[in-house]
Amino acid sequence: MTLFVISFLIGCLSVMTVRGKRGNWPPGLPVTRPRLVAVGGTYEGTRGQASDAYVIQERLVAAADGTAGAEPGHPAAALALGAVVAARPQRAGTRVQDLDECAQAAHRAVRTAALRDPAAPGLVSTLDMIVLDPGESPCLRFAHVGNGAIWHCAKDAAPVPLTTSHSFDNGPLLRGLGLPAALNPEVGTVPIRPGDRVVIVTHGVIQALGAQRMTELFTEGASPMACLDRMYDELAAAEPKEDATVIVADVAL
Image (tube, rainbow, N blue to C red):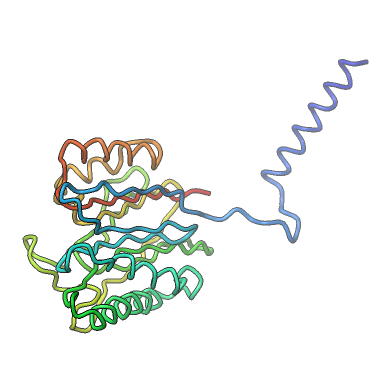
């Protein structure tokens, strides 16, 4: 009798499991949607001057570098990211132009701070930002200003850069948050699927590791944390002079 009851219960559990995974969801129950599983870190440069900042939220990831063309030690990156978080781009709309408006808000925040502080006329920051839109055709929107980079690593494919640097041969920034000229951020969108990986790096990473080795590391590690750990190992060996920020985000269900 006991064996019969146990067998019956196991059979019921099996049926419930199949129905829960494959059957139609009853109205009102939540539906699984793509999300970003992300980790990040800033490897402090040997100059000892804090410059980078980053933010990770459920569908928003952004990084900023506040030393490219700016006075060292000023919180340009924090000002930029504060404006990004306040704009809530992951909820403000799904157009690519919405990210342009978010970047413009960050630009105004840094520019206003520079004008108000006579001691910081060169207050400038970069910005690299991605937003996950989990609709029927999931995609990533991105915005880029400066000499950082955003890379898309589609599942089982080589990494592809989504952005181009706004400086030549480590020269001054041609585009940057806070510069007197009108801001023209690079914005775009890319379709994504579960298993894809997106990596954001500031200029310190590119300088320390070089583009070729950096992209080789993007696909190492089965998880974002494993990938970040591997990149940290190589940054430690390279000892970058300026802050080097890495954010690794996998698209998951």
